[in-house]
Image (tube, rainbow, N blue to C red; front, side, top):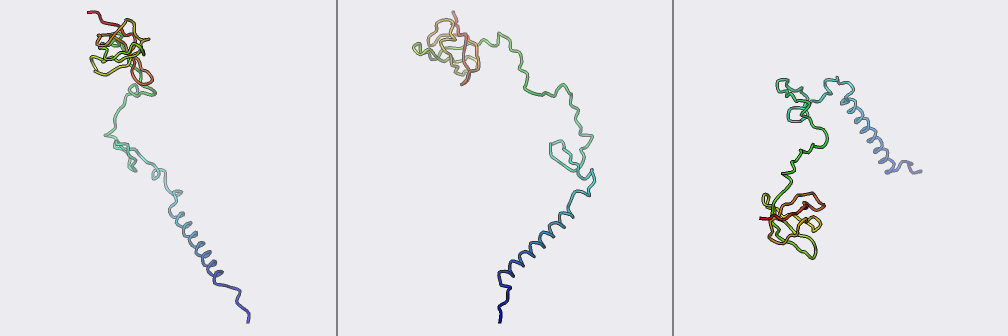
Length: 152
């Protein structure tokens, strides 16, 4: 007697192939049933409500806000013109190292400590002197320039 050509593993492979075909056919039928091709344009529209959320209902015209075109600002904010009198600050020297050529000034208004270098000093200063200065933005923060001693 001859042995059958069909083995157990061949049967299993055939079952798996048949099962995959059926699953593929079911997925295709599901996609056809749920496709957007038959929907109207109104069904596909999405609206943004007053809170910025997407919704399927159109916004209420009574809640419409009127925005002036000139109020819309594109790009970087325009910097306000600062008067030269506002640029000059007053403070006192809290630390100064003459050998290394740098120090710190405590601003009278903001009470913040601002770095200054000897190159930005116009008149000679020492610790606890009252000074006037201007501020510029440096790599590591604010720098005092044009440091001048206040004569009483």
